[in-house]
Image 1 (tube, rainbow, N blue to C red):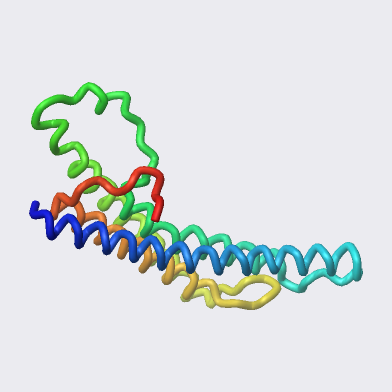
Image 2 (spheres, one colour):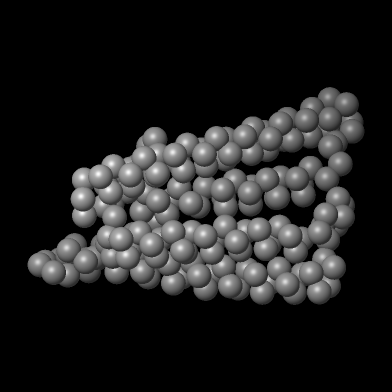
Length: 170
């Protein structure tokens, strides 16, 4: 792989990490705000925030799925090297590529299943209990994000990009 391609990969990773960090941070601040308003309303004003539990669930899911692309770009998935620590030669050289291919297949299956679940929710017109927010668009948005991460990880495997940053720093 050329040095220019390596630099482009590093810049692209940094840009995506920055975007996901800002978005996840904004969602985390919103989650904090919801929690503070609910606690103050509940214990000081005797009037909790209506739908706080559902806001919390939706925001927590959004934080997790907006952070997933950064995890994929950094090769930050949980790994156990019981067997791979002993690899040598060509096996060690292609370990990252095989791992990325495996992760991309798993993410594709998860995305497909989430899309199917979203379609099922849509067929029932399923909504949250208190806020009456439709659940299908939330599930399908998460499925699209996971699908994009599957494609991203697959492309990283095909292009044999260097390993992402350790620790996921910007």
